Length: 437
Image 1 (cartoon, rainbow, N blue to C red):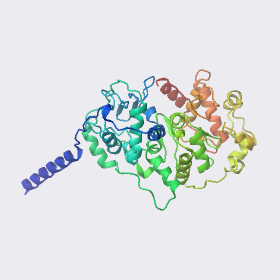
Image 2 (spheres, helix red, strand yellow; image 1 turned 180 degrees about the vertical axis):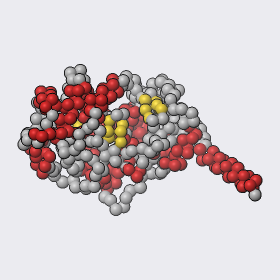
Image 3 (cartoon, rainbow, N blue to C red; image 1 turned 45 degrees about the horizontal axis):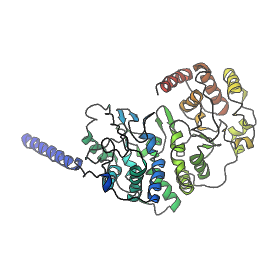
Image 4 (cartoon, rainbow, N blue to C red; image 1 turned 60 degrees about the vertical axis):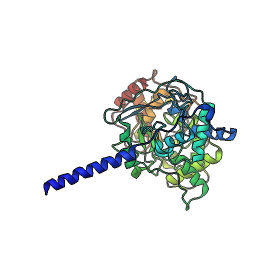
Protein backbone atom coordinates (compact mmCIF):
# COMPACT_ATOMS: atom_id res chain seq x y z
CA UNK A 1 0.00 0.00 0.00
CA UNK A 2 2.77 2.46 0.94
CA UNK A 3 4.64 1.53 -2.24
CA UNK A 4 1.55 2.28 -4.34
CA UNK A 5 1.10 5.66 -2.70
CA UNK A 6 4.76 6.47 -3.28
CA UNK A 7 4.55 5.49 -6.95
CA UNK A 8 1.37 7.52 -7.36
CA UNK A 9 3.08 10.57 -5.88
CA UNK A 10 6.08 10.10 -8.15
CA UNK A 11 3.79 9.79 -11.16
CA UNK A 12 1.89 12.89 -10.12
CA UNK A 13 5.16 14.81 -9.73
CA UNK A 14 6.25 13.72 -13.20
CA UNK A 15 2.92 14.76 -14.72
CA UNK A 16 3.09 18.18 -12.99
CA UNK A 17 6.70 18.66 -14.12
CA UNK A 18 5.82 17.78 -17.72
CA UNK A 19 2.76 20.04 -17.66
CA UNK A 20 4.77 22.93 -16.22
CA UNK A 21 7.51 22.41 -18.84
CA UNK A 22 4.92 22.53 -21.63
CA UNK A 23 3.37 25.66 -20.11
CA UNK A 24 6.73 27.35 -19.58
CA UNK A 25 8.26 26.57 -22.96
CA UNK A 26 7.98 29.11 -25.78
CA UNK A 27 9.55 28.80 -29.19
CA UNK A 28 11.97 31.31 -30.65
CA UNK A 29 10.30 33.58 -33.17
CA UNK A 30 12.03 34.30 -36.48
CA UNK A 31 14.29 37.34 -36.68
CA UNK A 32 13.10 40.18 -38.90
CA UNK A 33 15.46 42.38 -40.88
CA UNK A 34 14.89 46.13 -40.79
CA UNK A 35 14.10 46.08 -44.50
CA UNK A 36 11.24 43.63 -43.89
CA UNK A 37 9.46 45.71 -41.28
CA UNK A 38 6.04 47.06 -42.20
CA UNK A 39 5.65 50.70 -43.13
CA UNK A 40 4.36 53.00 -40.40
CA UNK A 41 2.32 56.12 -41.02
CA UNK A 42 3.03 59.34 -39.13
CA UNK A 43 -0.16 59.13 -37.03
CA UNK A 44 0.73 55.64 -35.75
CA UNK A 45 4.27 56.71 -34.88
CA UNK A 46 2.96 59.74 -32.99
CA UNK A 47 0.46 57.55 -31.16
CA UNK A 48 3.35 55.31 -30.14
CA UNK A 49 5.43 58.25 -28.95
CA UNK A 50 2.65 59.47 -26.69
CA UNK A 51 2.03 55.97 -25.33
CA UNK A 52 5.75 55.48 -24.67
CA UNK A 53 5.73 58.73 -22.70
CA UNK A 54 2.60 57.70 -20.79
CA UNK A 55 4.35 54.44 -19.87
CA UNK A 56 7.58 56.31 -18.97
CA UNK A 57 9.44 53.77 -21.10
CA UNK A 58 12.49 56.01 -21.53
CA UNK A 59 12.70 56.61 -17.76
CA UNK A 60 13.00 52.90 -16.96
CA UNK A 61 15.03 51.90 -20.02
CA UNK A 62 17.68 54.62 -19.81
CA UNK A 63 20.61 54.43 -17.40
CA UNK A 64 21.81 57.61 -15.73
CA UNK A 65 23.97 59.37 -18.31
CA UNK A 66 23.15 56.71 -20.91
CA UNK A 67 21.57 56.87 -24.33
CA UNK A 68 17.75 56.90 -24.49
CA UNK A 69 16.18 53.44 -24.37
CA UNK A 70 19.58 51.70 -24.33
CA UNK A 71 18.82 49.96 -21.03
CA UNK A 72 20.83 49.19 -17.89
CA UNK A 73 18.69 51.29 -15.60
CA UNK A 74 18.89 49.40 -12.27
CA UNK A 75 15.59 48.19 -10.85
CA UNK A 76 16.37 47.38 -7.23
CA UNK A 77 14.15 44.79 -5.55
CA UNK A 78 14.21 42.83 -2.32
CA UNK A 79 15.58 39.89 -4.32
CA UNK A 80 18.37 41.65 -6.21
CA UNK A 81 18.92 44.18 -8.97
CA UNK A 82 17.48 43.71 -12.45
CA UNK A 83 18.81 45.88 -15.27
CA UNK A 84 16.34 47.19 -17.81
CA UNK A 85 16.94 45.84 -21.30
CA UNK A 86 18.05 47.72 -24.40
CA UNK A 87 14.91 48.43 -26.44
CA UNK A 88 16.52 50.48 -29.18
CA UNK A 89 16.34 49.00 -32.72
CA UNK A 90 19.96 47.82 -32.51
CA UNK A 91 20.02 44.34 -34.10
CA UNK A 92 22.72 42.90 -31.82
CA UNK A 93 21.95 44.18 -28.32
CA UNK A 94 18.47 45.69 -28.70
CA UNK A 95 15.21 44.64 -30.34
CA UNK A 96 16.19 45.44 -33.92
CA UNK A 97 15.46 41.89 -35.11
CA UNK A 98 12.05 41.70 -33.43
CA UNK A 99 8.92 41.44 -35.55
CA UNK A 100 5.65 43.07 -34.49
CA UNK A 101 4.54 39.59 -33.32
CA UNK A 102 7.63 39.22 -31.12
CA UNK A 103 7.07 42.66 -29.61
CA UNK A 104 3.42 41.84 -28.93
CA UNK A 105 4.41 38.61 -27.20
CA UNK A 106 6.80 40.47 -24.92
CA UNK A 107 4.20 43.07 -24.02
CA UNK A 108 1.26 40.72 -23.65
CA UNK A 109 2.92 37.56 -22.31
CA UNK A 110 6.27 38.61 -20.87
CA UNK A 111 8.29 36.42 -23.26
CA UNK A 112 11.06 37.76 -25.51
CA UNK A 113 11.76 36.89 -29.16
CA UNK A 114 14.08 34.07 -28.17
CA UNK A 115 11.36 32.48 -26.03
CA UNK A 116 12.81 33.50 -22.65
CA UNK A 117 10.53 34.63 -19.84
CA UNK A 118 11.04 38.26 -18.83
CA UNK A 119 11.50 39.16 -15.19
CA UNK A 120 8.45 40.93 -13.75
CA UNK A 121 10.44 44.13 -13.21
CA UNK A 122 9.04 44.63 -16.73
CA UNK A 123 5.35 45.24 -15.96
CA UNK A 124 3.83 42.87 -18.49
CA UNK A 125 1.16 42.14 -15.89
CA UNK A 126 -0.14 45.61 -16.84
CA UNK A 127 0.89 45.76 -20.48
CA UNK A 128 -1.08 42.59 -21.16
CA UNK A 129 -4.18 44.80 -21.00
CA UNK A 130 -3.11 46.93 -23.99
CA UNK A 131 -4.82 46.54 -27.33
CA UNK A 132 -2.89 45.15 -30.29
CA UNK A 133 -3.27 48.53 -31.97
CA UNK A 134 -1.56 50.37 -29.12
CA UNK A 135 1.23 47.79 -28.86
CA UNK A 136 1.82 48.05 -32.60
CA UNK A 137 1.98 51.84 -32.30
CA UNK A 138 4.67 51.51 -29.61
CA UNK A 139 6.60 49.18 -31.90
CA UNK A 140 6.29 51.67 -34.76
CA UNK A 141 7.68 54.49 -32.62
CA UNK A 142 10.60 52.50 -31.21
CA UNK A 143 11.62 51.16 -34.61
CA UNK A 144 11.20 54.47 -36.44
CA UNK A 145 12.20 57.25 -34.07
CA UNK A 146 14.61 55.76 -31.54
CA UNK A 147 18.31 55.74 -32.40
CA UNK A 148 19.91 52.25 -32.38
CA UNK A 149 22.51 51.90 -29.63
CA UNK A 150 24.87 48.96 -29.24
CA UNK A 151 24.72 48.45 -25.48
CA UNK A 152 24.67 44.95 -23.94
CA UNK A 153 22.32 44.57 -20.98
CA UNK A 154 23.98 43.76 -17.68
CA UNK A 155 23.17 40.50 -15.91
CA UNK A 156 20.85 40.70 -12.93
CA UNK A 157 22.10 40.08 -9.42
CA UNK A 158 19.21 37.77 -8.58
CA UNK A 159 20.43 34.74 -6.61
CA UNK A 160 19.94 31.15 -7.73
CA UNK A 161 17.31 29.86 -8.42
CA UNK A 162 15.47 33.18 -8.88
CA UNK A 163 17.73 33.97 -11.82
CA UNK A 164 16.33 30.99 -13.78
CA UNK A 165 13.99 32.53 -16.28
CA UNK A 166 11.79 29.49 -16.83
CA UNK A 167 10.74 29.69 -13.18
CA UNK A 168 9.07 33.01 -14.02
CA UNK A 169 6.38 30.90 -15.67
CA UNK A 170 5.35 29.73 -12.21
CA UNK A 171 5.23 33.33 -10.97
CA UNK A 172 2.98 34.22 -13.89
CA UNK A 173 0.72 31.26 -13.20
CA UNK A 174 0.27 32.44 -9.63
CA UNK A 175 -0.05 36.18 -10.06
CA UNK A 176 -0.77 37.37 -13.61
CA UNK A 177 -4.21 37.67 -15.13
CA UNK A 178 -3.35 37.73 -18.82
CA UNK A 179 -5.70 39.30 -21.34
CA UNK A 180 -6.80 42.62 -22.83
CA UNK A 181 -8.66 45.24 -20.84
CA UNK A 182 -12.39 44.59 -20.73
CA UNK A 183 -14.54 47.72 -20.36
CA UNK A 184 -16.94 47.85 -17.43
CA UNK A 185 -20.42 48.16 -18.98
CA UNK A 186 -21.69 49.91 -15.86
CA UNK A 187 -19.19 52.76 -16.27
CA UNK A 188 -19.06 55.55 -18.83
CA UNK A 189 -16.48 55.97 -21.58
CA UNK A 190 -14.31 58.41 -19.63
CA UNK A 191 -14.03 56.08 -16.63
CA UNK A 192 -13.17 53.11 -18.85
CA UNK A 193 -10.58 55.10 -20.77
CA UNK A 194 -8.98 56.19 -17.51
CA UNK A 195 -8.98 52.63 -16.19
CA UNK A 196 -7.46 51.34 -19.44
CA UNK A 197 -4.61 53.85 -19.22
CA UNK A 198 -4.02 53.51 -15.47
CA UNK A 199 -4.12 49.73 -15.37
CA UNK A 200 -2.36 49.29 -18.71
CA UNK A 201 0.31 51.52 -20.20
CA UNK A 202 0.80 53.77 -17.15
CA UNK A 203 0.85 50.79 -14.73
CA UNK A 204 0.05 53.04 -11.76
CA UNK A 205 -0.41 50.09 -9.43
CA UNK A 206 3.22 49.10 -9.90
CA UNK A 207 4.19 51.92 -7.53
CA UNK A 208 1.00 52.60 -5.57
CA UNK A 209 0.07 49.01 -4.66
CA UNK A 210 1.87 47.07 -1.89
CA UNK A 211 3.58 43.85 -2.91
CA UNK A 212 3.47 40.41 -1.36
CA UNK A 213 6.40 38.27 -0.23
CA UNK A 214 7.05 37.10 -3.81
CA UNK A 215 7.09 40.59 -5.29
CA UNK A 216 3.64 40.55 -6.90
CA UNK A 217 1.15 43.36 -6.43
CA UNK A 218 -1.25 42.57 -3.60
CA UNK A 219 -4.57 43.10 -5.37
CA UNK A 220 -6.37 42.85 -2.06
CA UNK A 221 -4.73 46.19 -1.18
CA UNK A 222 -4.88 47.74 -4.62
CA UNK A 223 -3.68 51.37 -4.77
CA UNK A 224 -3.24 51.51 -0.98
CA UNK A 225 0.28 52.94 -1.17
CA UNK A 226 3.80 51.51 -1.16
CA UNK A 227 7.44 52.43 -0.63
CA UNK A 228 9.47 53.16 -3.79
CA UNK A 229 13.21 53.77 -3.41
CA UNK A 230 12.72 55.20 0.14
CA UNK A 231 9.87 57.47 -1.02
CA UNK A 232 6.25 56.78 -0.17
CA UNK A 233 3.86 56.45 -3.10
CA UNK A 234 0.70 57.51 -1.22
CA UNK A 235 -2.53 55.58 -1.28
CA UNK A 236 -4.84 56.55 -4.12
CA UNK A 237 -7.88 55.21 -2.30
CA UNK A 238 -9.84 56.79 0.54
CA UNK A 239 -6.78 55.96 2.67
CA UNK A 240 -4.91 58.86 1.05
CA UNK A 241 -3.62 61.02 3.93
CA UNK A 242 -4.26 64.41 2.35
CA UNK A 243 -6.42 66.72 4.45
CA UNK A 244 -8.31 67.81 1.32
CA UNK A 245 -10.25 65.38 -0.82
CA UNK A 246 -9.01 64.60 -4.31
CA UNK A 247 -11.50 65.44 -7.05
CA UNK A 248 -11.24 64.58 -10.72
CA UNK A 249 -10.34 68.22 -11.38
CA UNK A 250 -7.49 68.14 -8.83
CA UNK A 251 -6.16 64.89 -10.25
CA UNK A 252 -6.29 66.11 -13.85
CA UNK A 253 -4.43 69.31 -12.96
CA UNK A 254 -1.81 67.38 -10.99
CA UNK A 255 -1.14 64.95 -13.84
CA UNK A 256 -0.94 67.75 -16.39
CA UNK A 257 1.19 70.26 -14.49
CA UNK A 258 2.87 68.25 -11.74
CA UNK A 259 1.28 70.34 -9.00
CA UNK A 260 -1.97 71.03 -7.26
CA UNK A 261 -2.27 73.73 -4.64
CA UNK A 262 -4.41 71.50 -2.46
CA UNK A 263 -2.15 68.44 -2.53
CA UNK A 264 1.44 69.29 -3.40
CA UNK A 265 3.83 68.53 -6.21
CA UNK A 266 5.14 65.61 -8.23
CA UNK A 267 8.60 65.02 -6.75
CA UNK A 268 10.94 62.07 -6.35
CA UNK A 269 9.96 59.04 -8.47
CA UNK A 270 6.70 60.77 -9.41
CA UNK A 271 8.50 63.71 -11.03
CA UNK A 272 9.47 61.98 -14.28
CA UNK A 273 6.17 60.08 -14.34
CA UNK A 274 4.45 63.42 -14.90
CA UNK A 275 7.00 65.67 -16.57
CA UNK A 276 8.71 63.12 -18.81
CA UNK A 277 5.66 61.00 -19.30
CA UNK A 278 1.99 61.10 -18.56
CA UNK A 279 1.57 64.83 -19.19
CA UNK A 280 2.13 64.05 -22.90
CA UNK A 281 -1.33 62.50 -23.04
CA UNK A 282 -4.06 64.64 -24.60
CA UNK A 283 -6.32 66.55 -22.24
CA UNK A 284 -9.22 64.14 -22.70
CA UNK A 285 -7.03 61.25 -21.52
CA UNK A 286 -5.78 63.20 -18.51
CA UNK A 287 -9.38 64.03 -17.67
CA UNK A 288 -10.28 60.36 -17.99
CA UNK A 289 -7.50 59.45 -15.56
CA UNK A 290 -8.86 62.08 -13.18
CA UNK A 291 -12.35 60.57 -13.40
CA UNK A 292 -11.02 57.07 -12.81
CA UNK A 293 -8.83 57.88 -9.81
CA UNK A 294 -11.49 60.09 -8.25
CA UNK A 295 -13.63 56.97 -8.38
CA UNK A 296 -10.84 54.87 -6.86
CA UNK A 297 -10.61 57.42 -4.06
CA UNK A 298 -14.32 57.00 -3.48
CA UNK A 299 -15.23 60.37 -4.91
CA UNK A 300 -16.53 60.63 -8.44
CA UNK A 301 -17.16 64.37 -8.15
CA UNK A 302 -15.53 66.33 -10.96
CA UNK A 303 -17.03 69.64 -9.87
CA UNK A 304 -15.49 72.78 -8.37
CA UNK A 305 -12.51 72.73 -6.05
CA UNK A 306 -13.18 72.45 -2.33
CA UNK A 307 -13.23 75.54 -0.15
CA UNK A 308 -9.89 75.65 1.73
CA UNK A 309 -11.57 77.28 4.72
CA UNK A 310 -13.79 74.21 5.13
CA UNK A 311 -10.97 72.28 6.78
CA UNK A 312 -10.53 73.01 10.51
CA UNK A 313 -6.78 72.36 10.33
CA UNK A 314 -6.46 74.52 7.23
CA UNK A 315 -8.57 77.32 8.65
CA UNK A 316 -6.24 77.52 11.64
CA UNK A 317 -3.15 77.63 9.45
CA UNK A 318 -4.67 80.13 7.02
CA UNK A 319 -5.34 82.43 9.94
CA UNK A 320 -1.73 82.08 11.05
CA UNK A 321 -2.77 80.74 14.43
CA UNK A 322 -1.53 77.20 15.00
CA UNK A 323 -2.06 76.07 18.57
CA UNK A 324 0.88 77.55 20.58
CA UNK A 325 1.11 74.31 22.55
CA UNK A 326 2.22 72.52 19.36
CA UNK A 327 5.15 74.80 18.58
CA UNK A 328 8.71 73.59 18.69
CA UNK A 329 10.95 76.61 19.02
CA UNK A 330 13.87 75.51 16.85
CA UNK A 331 11.67 74.18 14.08
CA UNK A 332 9.51 77.28 14.09
CA UNK A 333 12.55 79.58 13.90
CA UNK A 334 14.18 77.59 11.11
CA UNK A 335 10.91 77.37 9.19
CA UNK A 336 10.45 81.12 9.47
CA UNK A 337 13.92 81.87 8.12
CA UNK A 338 14.29 79.12 5.49
CA UNK A 339 10.78 78.22 4.33
CA UNK A 340 8.10 80.76 5.15
CA UNK A 341 9.13 83.25 2.46
CA UNK A 342 7.64 80.86 -0.10
CA UNK A 343 5.22 78.82 1.97
CA UNK A 344 3.62 81.92 3.40
CA UNK A 345 0.02 81.06 2.51
CA UNK A 346 -2.03 83.17 4.88
CA UNK A 347 -5.22 83.55 2.90
CA UNK A 348 -7.56 81.55 0.75
CA UNK A 349 -6.23 83.38 -2.33
CA UNK A 350 -2.66 82.35 -1.60
CA UNK A 351 -3.78 78.77 -1.10
CA UNK A 352 -4.71 78.71 -4.77
CA UNK A 353 -1.09 79.43 -5.71
CA UNK A 354 1.35 76.77 -6.85
CA UNK A 355 3.22 76.63 -3.52
CA UNK A 356 0.91 74.48 -1.42
CA UNK A 357 0.25 75.09 2.23
CA UNK A 358 2.05 72.27 3.97
CA UNK A 359 -0.81 71.58 6.34
CA UNK A 360 -2.81 69.99 3.51
CA UNK A 361 0.14 68.38 1.76
CA UNK A 362 0.25 64.61 2.12
CA UNK A 363 3.99 64.75 2.92
CA UNK A 364 3.24 66.17 6.37
CA UNK A 365 0.48 63.65 6.99
CA UNK A 366 2.07 60.33 6.00
CA UNK A 367 3.09 57.82 8.65
CA UNK A 368 6.66 57.99 7.33
CA UNK A 369 8.31 61.46 7.05
CA UNK A 370 10.51 60.31 4.14
CA UNK A 371 8.84 62.39 1.41
CA UNK A 372 9.07 65.60 3.42
CA UNK A 373 12.70 64.92 4.39
CA UNK A 374 13.69 64.12 0.80
CA UNK A 375 12.26 67.42 -0.43
CA UNK A 376 13.96 69.45 2.32
CA UNK A 377 17.26 67.71 1.62
CA UNK A 378 17.28 67.91 -2.17
CA UNK A 379 14.69 70.52 -3.04
CA UNK A 380 12.53 70.55 -6.14
CA UNK A 381 14.48 71.22 -9.36
CA UNK A 382 13.02 72.73 -12.51
CA UNK A 383 12.24 69.29 -13.95
CA UNK A 384 9.88 68.46 -11.11
CA UNK A 385 6.96 70.08 -9.38
CA UNK A 386 5.17 72.99 -10.97
CA UNK A 387 6.52 74.70 -14.09
CA UNK A 388 8.55 77.77 -13.21
CA UNK A 389 8.60 77.09 -9.47
CA UNK A 390 11.66 75.60 -7.77
CA UNK A 391 12.63 74.87 -4.20
CA UNK A 392 16.26 75.06 -3.05
CA UNK A 393 18.02 72.07 -1.53
CA UNK A 394 19.05 72.34 2.10
CA UNK A 395 21.34 69.31 2.18
CA UNK A 396 24.44 71.45 2.66
CA UNK A 397 22.81 74.29 4.57
CA UNK A 398 21.08 72.37 7.37
CA UNK A 399 22.27 69.46 9.46
CA UNK A 400 20.22 66.43 10.48
CA UNK A 401 19.02 67.99 13.73
CA UNK A 402 17.86 71.16 11.99
CA UNK A 403 15.96 69.33 9.24
CA UNK A 404 14.41 67.09 11.88
CA UNK A 405 13.33 70.19 13.82
CA UNK A 406 11.57 71.66 10.77
CA UNK A 407 9.83 68.36 10.07
CA UNK A 408 8.75 68.03 13.69
CA UNK A 409 7.43 71.60 13.75
CA UNK A 410 5.42 71.10 10.57
CA UNK A 411 3.96 67.85 11.83
CA UNK A 412 2.99 69.47 15.15
CA UNK A 413 1.73 72.81 13.87
CA UNK A 414 0.05 71.72 10.64
CA UNK A 415 -1.62 68.45 11.62
CA UNK A 416 -3.30 66.82 14.58
CA UNK A 417 -1.39 63.58 13.98
CA UNK A 418 1.12 61.84 16.29
CA UNK A 419 4.72 63.08 16.22
CA UNK A 420 7.18 61.20 14.04
CA UNK A 421 9.68 59.23 16.17
CA UNK A 422 13.48 59.32 15.81
CA UNK A 423 13.48 62.10 13.22
CA UNK A 424 17.24 62.92 13.32
CA UNK A 425 18.08 59.26 12.69
CA UNK A 426 15.59 59.12 9.80
CA UNK A 427 17.09 62.26 8.26
CA UNK A 428 20.58 60.77 8.51
CA UNK A 429 19.45 57.53 6.92
CA UNK A 430 17.79 59.27 3.98
CA UNK A 431 20.72 61.69 3.56
CA UNK A 432 23.10 58.75 3.23
CA UNK A 433 20.78 56.86 0.90
CA UNK A 434 20.34 59.79 -1.45
CA UNK A 435 24.07 60.32 -1.50
CA UNK A 436 24.57 56.87 -3.02
CA UNK A 437 22.26 57.47 -5.98
